[in-house]
Picture (cartoon, rainbow, N blue to C red):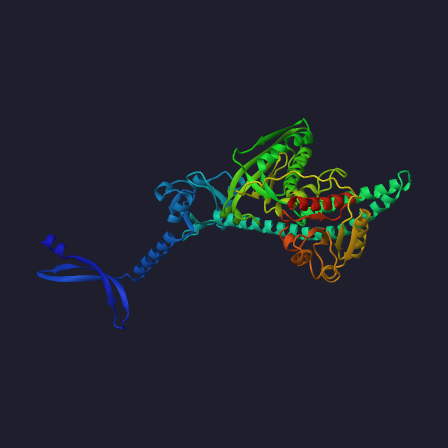
Amino acid sequence: MAQADSLLQNEFAFQHRLADGSARDVEVFSGPIWTGSKKLLFSVVKDITWRRQAEAKNKLLLQAIEQANEVVVVTDKDGAIQYVNPAFEKSSGYAKDEAAGQNMRILKSGKQDEAFYRELWGIISSGDVWRGRMVNKRKDGSLYTEEATISAVLDAGGAIVSYLAVKRDITEALRLEDEKRKLEEQLQHVQKMDAIGRLSGGIAHDFNNMLNVILGYGELVLEKLYHGDPLRLDVEQIIRAGKRSEELTRQLLTFSRKQPLQPEIIDINALLMSLEKMLRRLIGEDIDLKFSLVHDALRIKADPGQIEQVIINLAVNSRDAMPHGGTLTIETASVELDHQYAHTHAEVSEGEYVLIAVTDTGCGMDRETVSRVFEPFFTTKEKGKGTGLGLATTFGIIKQSGGNIMVYSELEQGTTFKIYLPATSAEPELKTDFHAEADRRDAGLQILLVEDEDLLRSLFAAILANLGHHVAVAANGGEALLLVEEKGLTPDLVITDVVMPGMNGAVLSERLRRSRPNLKILFMSGYTENAIVQRGVLDLDTHFIQKPFTFEAIAKKIEQVMRATERDS
């Protein structure tokens, strides 16, 4: 009977609605009892609303912790792991079962010293909260950075029973932050170099015009002095100083990307090998010159003379960085710069490039020097041993050729300059060698000179007349058209400035050739800004002379223009 009665016992829970309409969770235990011969049913009803609410809260809290992106770790007082959420598994690579019971030391990377951990434990064991960053090691050995908040868990009596750590993996965020910082630095550097370039170019252009006057009139005076005249030496010194200043302004114009280029298709490997003997003499016997060139043809479109100047400038800098000898290595390669590379490097476009790498084993440079190495007049050489324009010129040539140049260096670890120039599949053009020796008196051409600056116009007219030519002058394009179209002037050659107010040289040339399509035209400028010069490039069939120029230079150029026409006719 007792066994049967025990089967009638029951325990269940349900929601009980009270008289006021509210509901409570209750737990009921019921069973039979006997009073003499009479069987009764008794029930014990217990209100468990608070327990159900606590269970629901605990369930919700556990779901939140399990699904949180932040890492949650609970350890005992000694640091042994008692609980980790799934985010811990994802971040550290350790599964829950692997981590359980292990000490948090399994994450130690060695990037923090013992003093770091002593301070951390001192803070949390005193009941305070520790906040900070640490570098930890994943199960696979890779490192990651976490931002963590670690605090003590206290019992009702205020004693520490465990520790709670809430952590966030910030490795990717730090990488993106570092990438952003580098891009901002690159952008600031580009803007600085652009500003310096504009300033340098403007100064050089104006200075070029004044140099042209100094050199021109200096040569005119020199022409009139007999060889024994005591003034000849003084005038020659003036001209010599002017030519040196002319070279400096040319370098500034190159840096500012205002130097006209005459590009052609170049096989880079062939160009480098043609420079080998010169480079060996230049760097000296105590420096070992090595070439590592790819076998495939590497072609670019650039001014060969300018690219040679780049290689020579870099070789000279490498030589100066290795006063006690070393190794200079020149390498070439065909590379593709992808979207990711272009995205992380200012002013770089994705595509196919020819790489020229120049590496030395010299003294290297610190970060501050590297950041300024391409600035004009910045030099680490002793006074009198460098102008600070070699690398500035190199920078200008590469930029104007559509490429990029990067420098990598550390103190006592050497330096590498990497040049990236757009690759081309075009074939080099066959050219006929041509060299004309100009005879200053063998001329008699009718020349129309168009120059808007009074001093230069007078000077150029005197130079041309001194060479034996007949010269008509115009201060602008309108005057030139008037002389030709209204006054009937029939020049053999028009020498015109490129940049002039109202009508530039290119437009004037187009207008004049409407009626005289075979008219010979020679452009001149300190730097150019029109359609030709906006690209910084002259067409291969365009004749150009750079200001300032000497008697010999203009005479040779005129002869070249006229002879070129004879060959074409």
